[in-house]
Length: 219
Image (cartoon, rainbow, N blue to C red; front, top):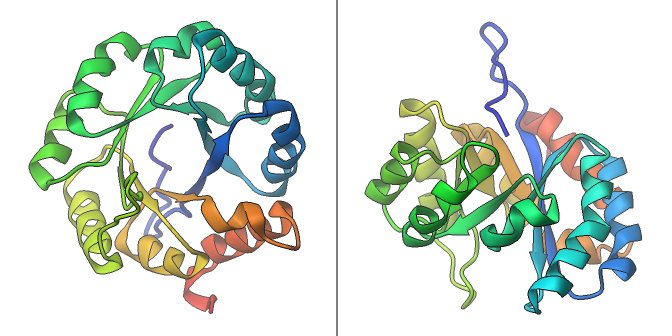
């Protein structure tokens, strides 16, 4: 993932970072993922897998990876940095500075090393200094807690003004996207409720893409 190129006097449209639900049956999920990837310009997919043995995890990744990478999107594992290379993934997303520092060296320079779950500005700066390919603000913790939208926007504004490393803003709902775009996010992560949209995930992603393309006019 690279920072979008800026056209003169115009901020580029942030690209989508698609976050999957926790997946156990890769074959059953493959059709839904294929529909999602086809519905919008997706820069990367964060693949979340239910805990299993290493061989089972790799097999799931190998089922879903070609769907993502065949559309020139990056396949990023949620954790699991130790199997990224063997599974053919493009990198891993590490939650928390400690996890990032422990795994980044094994991923770099061949693979993406992203960092989220950052507790402070100092942690974010340290991740950037130690080679993070992006930082993510706004993701939900395992216990369901999450900073307020105002706090997330403040962090993104601070980062985008001072650093060139891409910033991902995590949108828990489509109604948050406008604020993340206005704050300066380079990528917007979406998932969650979109996968259960009764119209289908493709329609939901099309709505997200429309908001990203013209956030100031979206309601």
